[in-house]
Amino acid sequence: MTLLLVMTGGAVGAVLRYLVDRVVVGAGRPSYWGTFAVNVVGAALLGGIAGTGTALDGPLARLLATGLCGALTTYSTFAYEVVQLAGGGARDRWRAAGYAAATLTVGFTALVTAHAMAAALAR
Image (cartoon, rainbow, N blue to C red; front, side):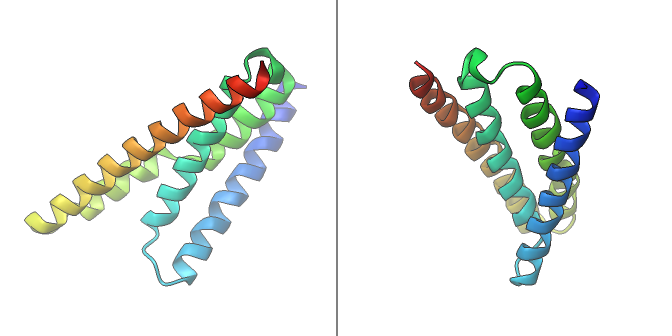
């Protein structure tokens, strides 16, 4: 049962990630903004799930945290895009460093904020 839940959440997360990327590129933005968006949203969702404590434990956590968040977020694409952005001159390296710093800072902030909010609501 757990495997089925993780697979189902993963399928939904992967499709959502793809759709966000298509929307971002369709709007004329570079695809790394789609990666940024899904990583921040995924971090917030994971923080919220963790913040509920045992309220979302067990099967629901496997579906949402492991499956959905695992497929929605992507560290490998983030790392690849940082390397791609840094491929030019000094200006490109600064842009890559800014993208990396913003992703980590905003993602962590989203996780901590969602965790605190969910923990407060779960009480």
